[in-house]
Image 1: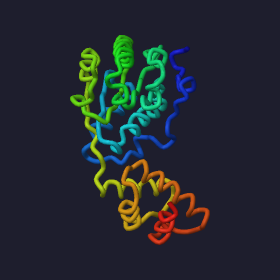
Image 2: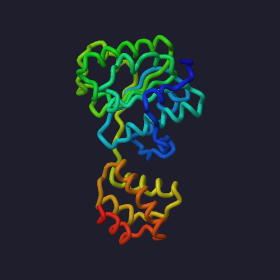
Image 3: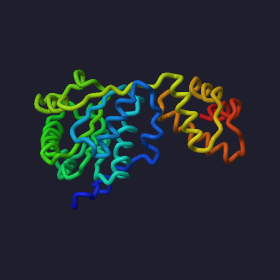
Image 4: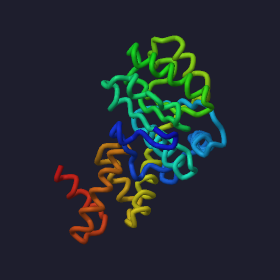
Length: 237
């Protein structure tokens, strides 16, 4: 395989079309995180970054946004969602990935305590470092609570920058909904966005999936995004 060739097709792993830094709802708490990831995915700095945060904090979005940003700046990359890959042979999954300039490994909690995976990631980490390339990893547990059994891997994970990604407040989620709607050409008032938040799953991914559904149905029915319309759609679930 040539250095610039992604392995996504062989691993059947793709990126979300809408996962970019530009549409990550940026709170003040996360500005330093996005700045560091921007530099990493532009090749302005090399090394290792570990992100951690609660479910819904946007870890997957940030890792995939870093991959998209790497493409825009001519860097080869690979995104590995461990939730989907943890039942495969780790040696085969990571083989040759050190050739990629940015390797993003999502969901370390899914392999914590798995001796084969921990060994494979430890050796991959060393090969990437020796190549002068970069890694970006994520976990929904803090480094102290992750439960990595291999001391050498636990040490490697703590060797670079570590950032906690802060979850959005309710106000931030309303703002995120309105910004995503505006990006799609939809007129979503703050009152309607607040209604959506208070009557549906508050996880940002679920909120955005609902927004996609509302967009489709509003076009089909030629309806505006009003509270009665949203209420009717939610009652269909």
